[in-house]
Amino acid sequence: MLLDTITPQTGTTVGVAMPISVVFTNPVAAKARATVEKHMKVSTSQPVAGAWHWFGDKRADWRPKSYWPSGTKVKIDADMKGISNGNGRYGVRSYTHTFKIGDDVRADVSVTGHTMKVTRNGKTVRTLSINAGSAQYPTWNGTMAVIDKQEKVHMTSCSVGISCDKGNPNYYDLTLPWDIHLTQSGTYVHYSTGDPNPGSGSARGSHGCVHLSMSDAKWFYGQVKQGDPVTITGSPRAKAPADNGYAAFNLEWNQWLAGSASGEGTTTTL
Image (cartoon, rainbow, N blue to C red; front, side, top):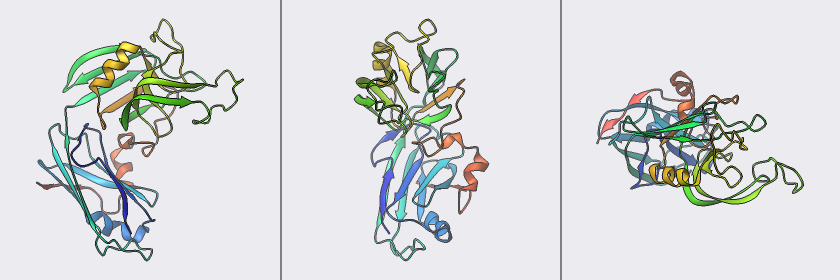
C-alpha cells in the first residue's frame, strides 16, 4: 500500500478552508481505516480540533472543525510502514508534509445580487460585480476551497458534458485568462470573452462559472491562493459535493464525523 498524493504540498502557504487530502493507490478496507487514520498524525503550532473523513475507499481528508486559524503551522506524518490496508497490502514508507495557513482571505458570491465580496483577515477589501450560472446551467452553491489557479485555461463545452456539437448554441472552445479553480467538475472564477462586463445590468448567465471583468479577474487572481474559501449563495443548485475538489465545509460537522473511523481529535502541538 502506497500513498499516491498528499495535498497540500510541503512548503506551501494555503487558505483557512484547505483540508489535508490523502489519496491511496489501492482501496483501504473499512476495518483498516481507524488504524490508518491513527498513523496519519496531524500536528499544529496551536491546538486545532478536527477529524478524518473517507470519500470512498481511496481518499481520506482531514479538516478542522471550523476554519484554520490564520498563521497556523501544520505537519502531517503519514507513517505507513507495515500498516495494513485490510486488503492484503502493507505500507512500505512514511511521508511528511509541512505547510502554513496564510492570511484569512474569503470570497462571498451572491448569485442574485451579482456581487462577490472579498475580505482579508475580516476586513472587506473590495466588492466586485459578477455573473454566475444561468437557469439551465446553475452554479454550485456552498463553500469551495480554491484547488489551484492558472493564468490561462483551455475550456470546452465537450469536456464538461454540455455539448460536443459545434452547431449547438451552448458549444464553446475557448482559452480564457485569470482562472481560479473551484471544482473538479469544471467550476472556475474567471474572465469570459462572452460576458466582458458582468453584473446585474448584463445578467448574462454562465455555464456554471463565476464571471468577472478582465481587470477584476486579474486583481482577484492576485489575491487568492489554494485553500481560500469561495462561498456561493443564491443559486438554485445544491451545494457542491464535498469531494468535488476541496469542498469539505459543505458538510455539517456531524456529517463529516459520520465518515470518520476514529472520530474527532485535537492535533498534537508542534
